[in-house]
Image (cartoon, rainbow, N blue to C red; front, side, top):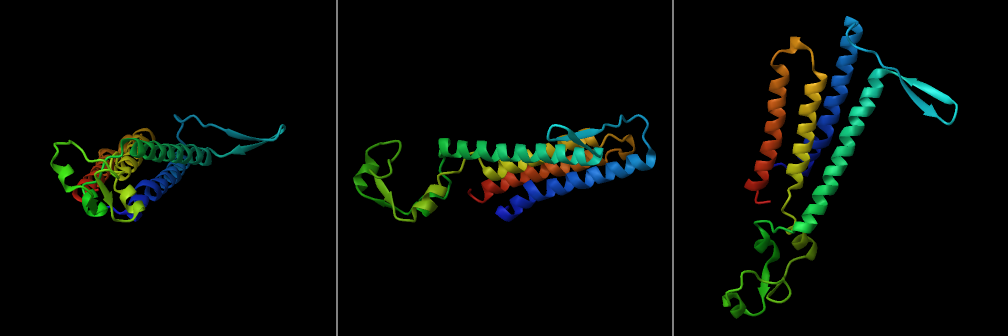
Amino acid sequence: TVNNTHLVLISFVSPLIFIIITEIVRAIYFRLNKAKERLRFIYKLKIGNKKTIDIPETLAYLYINCGAFLFGLLATVDVTDIAKVIVGRLRPNFLSTCKPNVQNPYSLCTGKTYLEPGIDFTCTENEDIVNQSRLSFPSGHSSLSFYSMIFLILYIKFSWSNKKLGLFPYLIQLVLFSTAFLTALTRVTDNK
């Protein structure tokens, strides 16, 4: 089971730590090897009309990569939440969560393809719990874990460009994809 705490660790904390460590290692590597093939950029932060501050390349990359990651994460949360409300797909455990009180048992035998809440039945459980059981698709856990892991896979592709690493980046990318895939599978096995 991937609960909410695990999701925060997988989709938020671990990627940020991963990006920070990668940028620190890259900075150390390029300082030690004085990579001549690498073009050094100077980033300037403009404060007011006249004052500018030079920002080291490592801090600029940290800001850019972490900012892009967090923006994408928030966009994923927003799109997923909007889609959940629009689709309103019932979780597999809806009946046990709703505990319906069928007002007219004969209405179940009329050949209707669906029952209307409030007309054919009423839920006897807390309304907040029932509303949560209407938000099955798209899975928030799946969308957040896949966004985070695909972001890191692409980040590795473009930032771990040293040929001396061999197959190690591909192994890490496989582990990241497997993490997202297993998170999605647990949503199915947990009937969520």
